[in-house]
Figure (spheres, rainbow, N blue to C red):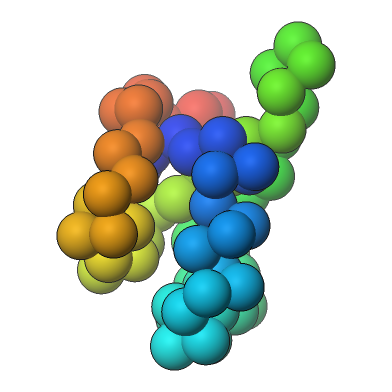
Length: 68
């Protein structure tokens, strides 16, 4: 699972409609979670294919441990 700042993910979703569709599918499957850390909105991504796609577009997320 990786954590991404929401303000960096949003422009990629707008620019890549196919990424937006994959994002929607991952959300339906429960592989995305939104969270606020302090004053920053982040998205936790569990889908390995979506993580690989984000990294291919130059966005590296921070690894996070599984939450209970």
